[in-house]
Image (tube, rainbow, N blue to C red):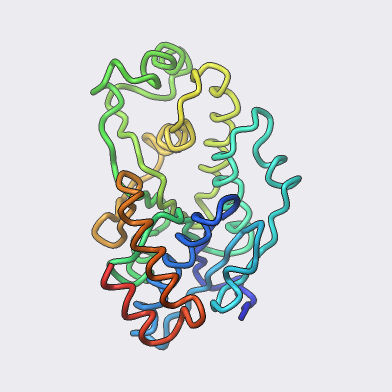
Length: 257
């Protein structure tokens, strides 16, 4: 069942394309959100999925927004950096809604999504978690490749906290931070020596000394470091509940993972 998102309600947003495993992760993450939202019948949160394949979400109360390859390619330009699309998607949703969270597929909820939105206040960026201070690891590729350039630009210092963007939450009034992070990605990509995490690094720079940054590992688990284990659990849940992913048993089982 697809629902039409309201422009006035908080938006929980997923970006999913490519291999089946990412869609499975997203379905499970959404189900884990619904498991907590069912405890609050008055919860007013919309779930949007930007995806190249609407079929996995057919039985979920979400709005699927088609994402064709040409659009995704355009959102990845000028360097074909596919993580750039995360910021473009969230920026687009924030043009329509007062507050939005974009969440990676490899996640599941410990608490209601409402608790996440409570941390997204004006002047605040919600991220998944902090990594370290930029200057703590002089051997990292982002340091060796970009440190002097960033000093020359005057945009980041060794005391900058680097962020994990498995969760990104902003209010509409702070969406300009995404414009800045996109600009930085485009400018720094040719100099970053293929750094995988350039996207969230640019978000860190954009927020540095500009926004209050909050994290949320107590509210949501981002299993980026133990994918094989959790993907096996997700596949088992899918195999059991694919026909009725929002049934009481299916939602209860999300909390067993």
